[in-house]
Every structure is written in C-alpha cells, then in structure tokens.
Length: 115
Length: 111
Image 1 (cartoon, rainbow over the protein chains, first blue to last red):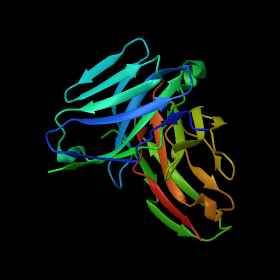
Image 2 (tube, rainbow over the protein chains, first blue to last red):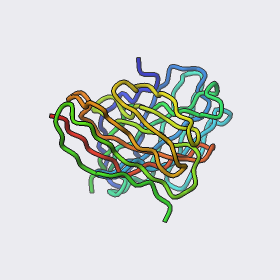
Image 3 (spheres, each protein chain N blue to C red):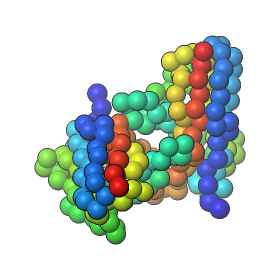
Image 4 (tube, chains in turn red, purple):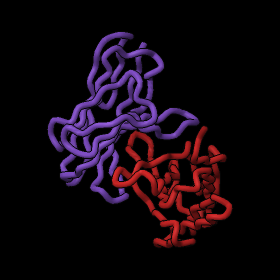
C-alpha cells in the first residue's frame, strides 16, 4: 500500500498560469516533506521542502503548502514556465527513521507547461 | 563539480547473466542508496548504506546485492537478473540531512 500518493499522473497548464501539484500521505509519522523534479534522462533534483511544524514554505516561484490534518501537501508554481515541464515527485520522511531518514516517494506527476 | 555518477547508463542483458551497476559520489557523503523507478510506482528504495561496511535493505531488496567497501562507491549487483528487474535505476547520496543527490540513472533491460 502506497503511503505517499500522487493521484494525478499528468497535468497540463498554460504558460504564465499557476500549476498546482497535489500529494496525499497516510502515515501520520511523516514529519518532513520534499518535492523533487525530474527531467528525461536525468536523475531527480531537489526542489523544495517543508517541515511538519510549518504550513507553508516559499522559494521564488515555488511554494509548498502542508495541511497536516488532511495529510495533504501541494506544490504551487507561479507563474509556470515551459522549462518547468518535468515529472514532479513528492517524498516524505518519517520521524521514526532516526538518522537513516528514509524517503518514501510518490508515483510522480508529469507537468506539461504549454507555451 | 559535485555529482553522483552511474555506469553504465544503458544496459541490455539476458536472464541469469550477472551484472554490476557502479555508483560513485565525490561529495564525501556518508549515506548512499539505490532506487528503482517503475511506471505508476514512483521511486522505491532497494538498499541503502549509512557508512562504509554498513548496508541495509530498503523496500524492494529481493534479487539485489550491494557492497560499501569505500565511502565513495556503492555498486548494485544483480547475481541472476530476471525480466521483472527491467527498470530505471537511480543511485543517490547525501549527508545526514535531507537533501538527496541523485545520479543520472541506468536503464536496464533484462530479456
């Protein structure tokens, strides 16, 4: 059973508009969340993260929102650019993993930003 | 340049023929791990290593072996590959914080 779920395999957005990527989790022990971005033929690269003690973290055009009661987080990209077209993975780390800090990934969402 | 390298990038092999995918990082990271990416399943961890000579199973370790004889290298070994191990493999490393650096991936096809 997947503990981190990205229910939308794909999303298309017009350039300049907002992209909203969603992620749900089931393990209430997750206390740190990350988003990774992956281009074809490359490995995933870290984008932005959020600790469970916060409900929002912003970095330039990227903002991650965390709703702990709903076990839901989202990544907002404003404004969206064609170069943002990639697969986005949500990941979570449980407090219980100690120093290992194991990541559990979602299945990914392919974002396509149309010019 | 700080990076994680993997070799080979692409590999086609046949069932039962032992193979090794190498992974090396130049960031002096203690923690290294291997993932496989499959459609609809995201990235699943195969094995990880907290330091030299310390390795442990991830979520999908069956059919794989690893070793960590040196800090910078973490090879993935398939003793007897099978078609269900056809996948895209990523090596990753990090210090004991949260940002993980990934290699470029190895696409393996087992016929």
